[in-house]
Image 1 (spheres, rainbow, N blue to C red):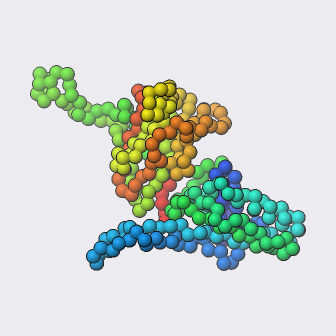
Image 2 (spheres, one colour):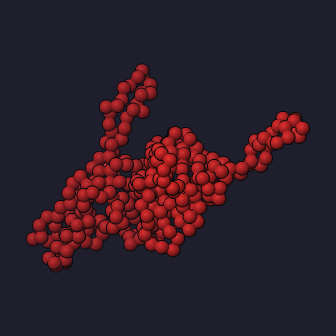
Image 3 (spheres, rainbow, N blue to C red):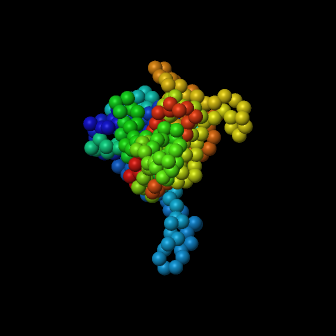
Length: 320
């Protein structure tokens, strides 16, 4: 069976669209089969204007950039056994799902049930369906992608994405041990410092892809004025009502709350334990949407609360 909710194992690739408001739509099955000419994985365009080849070793080719080419989705609405009313209902559903002012995730489901995902797709070709008089009219829609990468994808039984990579990032005030200066100096140990057993500390993330990865950062309360820093890039993201001044109370996340920050989708949601819905925290955000650069990334977590538990970062691996 497929690892994606509502998608059964088939002998061809299916495309599940998840709109930024959570609505889903499946192409490639049932009333929306693909044409025989459908190609899902057209290569990204290459932008060469940044390239200045230096010498004969091509060392400056790193200036090339990938640009997402338009991904077209083409198929048939219904078939000869469907009534005109059924086809018209399916036509309207198709056109109403693909709207402007939304981002789309596209999850490609393979015959063995595995899946990969593309993020932040947006409409570039309006959804269209040929007129009703045809036995099975063709449909078309085209998306481009702000993020050119393909990511590994898994989800739970409720359709929530499960990230394959996860790490704890400890609050700086929870870091203990290491080189500690004692209060007796040379009377005690001749050098004034001792080594104690270390615990927690900064978190090292290794990004093995050639592209930036934007993680999910989750803070569990209690936490006050939470901030995440990537010491390897100089980026930081903090939640505060104070801004650049000293007015306003601190941002406080209580022990029955959690703050979930999606660095890719640009959302910051505060959840209360046992309740549905969330509070939008974007107005209190200061800094940049943080990325893990290719290679080594050193993270630290700051909180004004001495009891803050570790926060977590989660991400999916780039597969292409």
